[in-house]
Length: 104
Image (cartoon, rainbow, N blue to C red; front, top):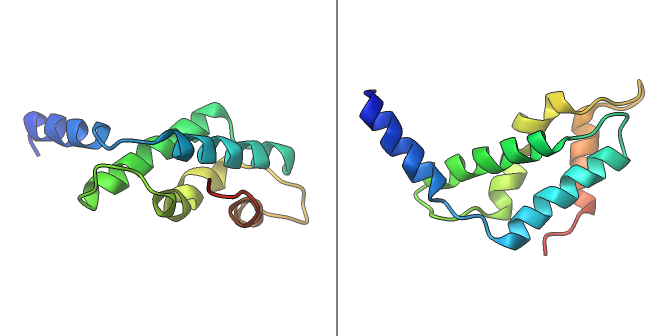
């Protein structure tokens, strides 16, 4: 890919809109991890998820992010960002967050 092609792709991704309820959903998911793990997802982790979900939406030909985008990509972005006690792992915290935190 050329530099111009990469810039075009980047512009396309950044045009995928993220509605306020989607931003709130990500924020509440991150808060859940901070309350239910030794070390939960930071604001940077939430931003990384926002960015990846924008890229996913654009790659699927959509101009907006959906809860499905978040639920699909959250393990990829957050798995390594969550530290837990010995009897739990990050994937369990993520699964619990997704099943507990409602999409509004």
